[in-house]
Length: 149
Image (cartoon, rainbow, N blue to C red; front, side, top):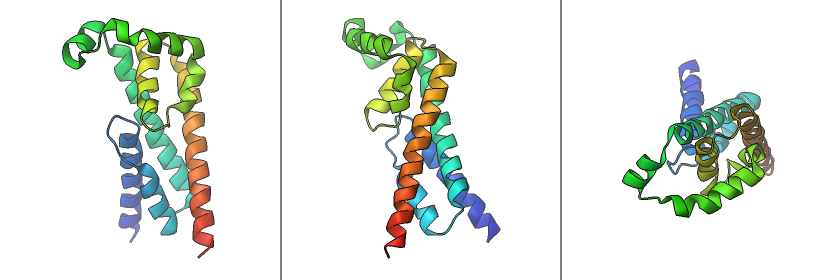
């Protein structure tokens, strides 16, 4: 039985990591399933947060090593189109990483923060806090929903 518990946590980590990349995946469903099946609440939140944070950091890293030639050649993104994103990211800076958990725009924020070389330590901290808060709220709502039944 213990083997299945470990696999559940591993699945949560992988789902959380992938959900923080450009792969459309809902790690919240996996988190709720584990909580509903009486997995340790704090372990679930910690593993989901860590996986999602590392996924966000990898998106930051991809942005950091990116360059205009690759963006223009493979993604057909012109420098002129990124002007608004650049000014937005430069204006808000590292606190923008707090919102990297948001659907659709979160990945863009993470890659953009890396691409425009916003301070890694600050980005990592803001991103961790945002993702931790997200999973804490989701997990608490899951527990609350389970208690209603």
